[in-house]
Length: 429
Image (cartoon, rainbow, N blue to C red):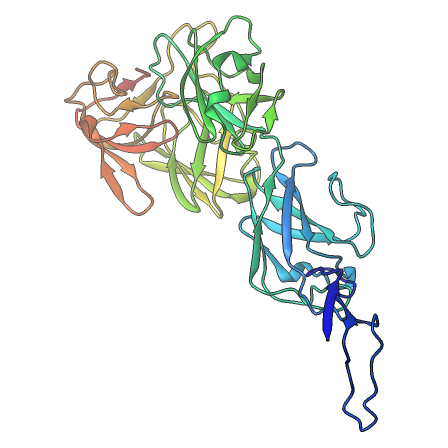
């Protein structure tokens, strides 16, 4: 006899195969040899496990961070079997799962009970692609076939990139031009990035070229030097796109004066800006939840003073040219927008170094300079005879960077031994 199949579907939640007795004799094992009639059908039950088909990720509020991931399964899933504890992400965290579109903002997940879609509500920094893993659990189709464990799927990128942050570039030469680093939330298609795609909200400043571009960073060259105490902004004036072709055609971001990475524990820092007229609590407001104490050293008096996050005690302010010890309970980034020079300068800022003593100093500028007294160096207001040593803190120890061994970098503080006697003014170079 012949048996044929109809309606073959390897992943359907309805019977997977219908068997049809097409011809011949199909007999049972009894003595009566009962025969099945030709044309009779028998359905095979679904025993196929559901599988992951596709995933989409979304930044539904356009803030530059992912907040939803939609998963499509091979067949309808029982909503009651979906549990966030059974899923993991390659980055970020899962807050909850929406199984029938309720409370979701993405356009992909329909408002249907027991369908093949569900949405992960997530907290993920940036918009780069994310892999969702299914480790183990109860995820099952409508006939209770459970999904294979140890499965994973990478989201398709349907999210437009966003401007992340902008900051003065550390390789500015400080004389003719200012370079600005602009960061996006993910890697970009550099072929779409032209200098005409960007603008600055100050009509006196123009963007003349792209200096470098790679990954999620583009460095813009401006037609003149400028300070950022008034918080100028970079905007998208054209169209740029990520590697998946998602376009960004609008948005602005403030150009920060500095962004200083603070490690957990002790940090030796300085500010490349004049905040001497600003309360410390204002300057550190962005990191105050992770800041324990700031120490200042007066070399002339051989005296320490401290500031803690319990209010401004008036003992000192954070001034340019000086170094400070800062203890952080967790890593963070100190961000600010201040000028180093007055808009109508009368004289440059300065810091008096004490002779024959260790002085805690800072780097004045928002760009890198060699640790030397030569032209273009960070120490040209001093002589070679003045400086015995210049030590940078690495987090675990010290490195002497004097005379070009390493550059003086914005945000770093240093221990300097002043070899000559008497006080001397240390000024920006």
